Length: 196
Length: 244
Image (tube, rainbow over all chains, first blue to last red; front, side, top):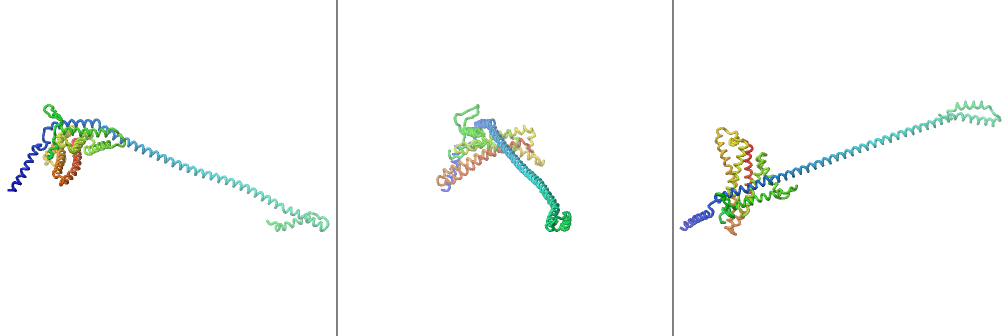
């Protein structure tokens, strides 16, 4: 009995709640057509206005902003690229100048070296010539002296021997005979005395 | 009133009753939140497009990221032919997103939780897409219902199925958004009610659930706006590039 009352009360309470809900709103407010026309009207009005303003004024501006930023960034990148190329070219130019200067310096050095060598050679030749000349001259002189030496020696020998003979024998002897003897002696012993 | 999780969807008149002929176009809380959403969209994007600095500030970044996001979505799904419809899809996405997001603030009204609003949007898209299809392809647009490479025996069945699926597009599009928003908000209200009824002792569990649900609902709010926009793109793609 108590059980029955208990379940019945639960059942009735559900009914009561259901009745309360139904009384309050009558199910889903969405299906109540009272304000449908109003909602359609305001939706068209607000959405239409928003669409017109967005499509005519705001979206072109945003797209313009994006485009201009894109082009600006591209321009900047291009400028940077150009400057990089410029600097690269300048670096190449600089390298070339350095290389050219280096080779120039090398050739100049070589030229100077050759010139100096030539000068030295020329001077050396001149000096050699001079030395040779002097040697020749000295040799000639020596030769001349050597050539004249036996005569002088013979003369001296003749004079000395004539004087000696004079002192020894008390009178002069014919110099021609003395010279003949000296000549003979000198011819025989010339090699022994003077070498050659 | 607080006990009923559906009362948050009530539409009520603000100010006097306005009647044009037989139609009641009174200003309601739904109208108020439509206006709030559109005004804030216009405000955000107007501020975001005002100055063009090379290094964008936060609001400009927001506007430009939204722009590129929607532009990429359209070009990915509908190709370059869909460019003239960019402004419409952008407005659609932003409107649904802002309405969903404003609905997430407590004591506000969610415009997109009403079937009439989503259905009008979906019906407009459906009619527009169908018109575009017939203008672009003439009666050749009907080839959409005849997929290529289907055996002749199956063809009558397939055509009937295709026609039904095509005609159910506005319904599925509108019901998806409406049902998602309504279910989420109802659930949050129910858990919120549990917090109150269980009090200090047992209220912590539904409270933590409610917190988690709020995060989920914010995700759903974004996702449903995205799905709404991307489905529009797909329908537009069908109309612009007839594949069958």
